[in-house]
Image 1 (spheres, rainbow, N blue to C red):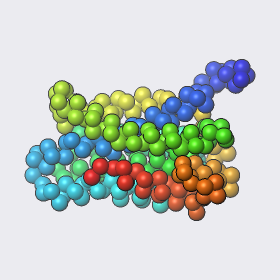
Image 2 (image 1 turned 90 degrees about the horizontal axis):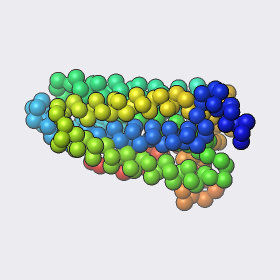
Image 3 (image 1 turned 45 degrees about the vertical axis):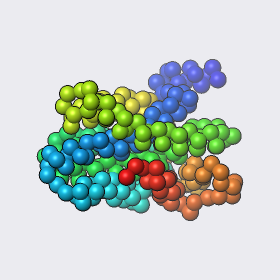
Length: 246
């Protein structure tokens, strides 16, 4: 343990315990952002003069971005590592926030919402697998419970934070995103120093097995396995969608 602590101190890499906190923070912020704009959609509709149907389509564009990432890049973090994908998701989330700030009509909101979905899709499966790998083997259930709890917490924290800023801060269509960007920049500093569990970034049976077991439902039998890392991500996304407020 002393040797490990010395190694982390010299290399600048966070310990596994702090890396777990960084991964949980990413789950909280990324899923919080998927619901952050919810209190603002009525204001957007009045500001940009679009219909309820258009508003619904803007909100649902998130699904297109998330599914495309899960289907096309579901195994990317197995190939290049957990940290690079997590950091890419953070960068896309910052771009999404900037798109919301600069939106001048429905088209801008569509682009911002699509970028939000892409960022969430990149982050979700990566962080779930990462959390499982950061926990000792006998704590698989703990990793799953933490991931689910933080996911649900994030979905609630986003609108709450936005509502408070709209009520008490100036520039209601801008302040929530500026605060969120600041939080994401702090998160990126932590993720950049976190311990990456993919030591040899390449697809392998071992990494795929770890990825699959990471998304095993808490109450599922030990024999349960999804068909692939991509299907694992999709199952996790379906859970998130069911938890997502309409």
